[in-house]
Amino acid sequence: MEFVLYEVKGQVGIITISREKALNALNSTVLEELDKTLDGVDLNEIRCLILTGAGEKSFVAGADIGEMSTLTKAEGEAFGKKGNDVFRKLETFPIPVIAAVNGFALGGGCEISMSCDIRICSENAVFGQPEVGLGITPGFGGTQRLARLVGPGMAKQMIYTARNIKADEALRIGLVNAVYPQGELMAAAEKMAAGIAKNAPIAVRNCKKAINDGLEADMDDAIVIEEKLFGDCFETEDQKYGMAFFLDKNKEKVKEPFKNA
Ligand code: DAK
Image (cartoon, rainbow, N blue to C red; front, side, top):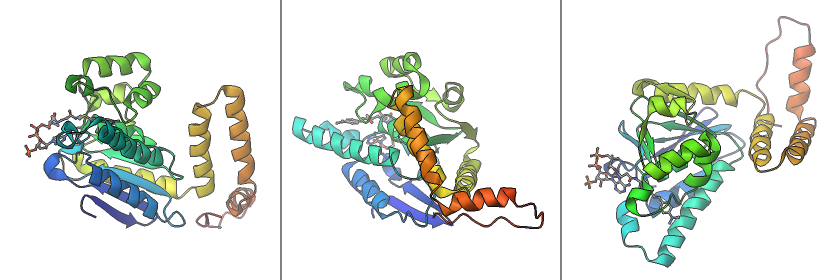
């Protein structure tokens, strides 16, 4: 692939958007390659993904303004659909995705990070939705996901003013979970991913689905969604092993890895 790298470390897959000269801006090729990369993830082996950008300056500086500037209405819609489809694929991907935001996350960059389950960032990270300054609205779900993550008041302030915020403010408003020195970001992401990967994989997947689907339902329906996904776990070997291990009083025993079965 030209702009997307994929690396496997144990049970963790690391996707790097690598178009450093344009600060990893999302053009059509990047979106297509991201889509193909996600389709190629071996879900029998990989239990958590990390999404990051190449270099130390930018995670993703937005959709490619050069490419967008000449789009016709029909081409704009096709570009928007390509982005929205891949962002939604990330959001509903069966396993958790951690965004390791290593610099600018503007426009489509902020939006792709919000399609991930968890965001952590480096101290030099900058978040923002600058679209109204370009004469457009956020188009890759920014109006929807930002409001859900940080609340409508703060989302409206960020989107209407197009003001960028730094890592410490992103942490304060709950847009990111933690901030690290640049040199420590990937190690922290990999440690978190490995921590997720060692837990019962079907249970983790069901938790993601319960949270995502439940947020789109009212509480009565959301609780039923949780009940069903909870019940499904009792058909897994991992549930039987996990509970038997806890109940076994032999202090010498060593916990075996979950089988994803
Ligand atoms: N697109 C294309 N190229 C970009 C870019 C971008 N978003 N951001 C940076 N670059 C390129 C610059 O043009 C420059 O290229 P050369 O001139 O070297 O060829 C190179 O990256 C380095 O950038 P700078 O020289 O500008 O670097 P600085 O450190 O001075 O500034 C910056 C860094 C991140 C503050 C600045 O580059 C910047 O403001 N970039 C634009 C940020 C931005 O406005 N992003 C939001 C884009 S709008 C849609 C769905 C979604 C969207 C639209 C439609 N539909 C549903 C249809 C999404 C829209 C957006 O994301």
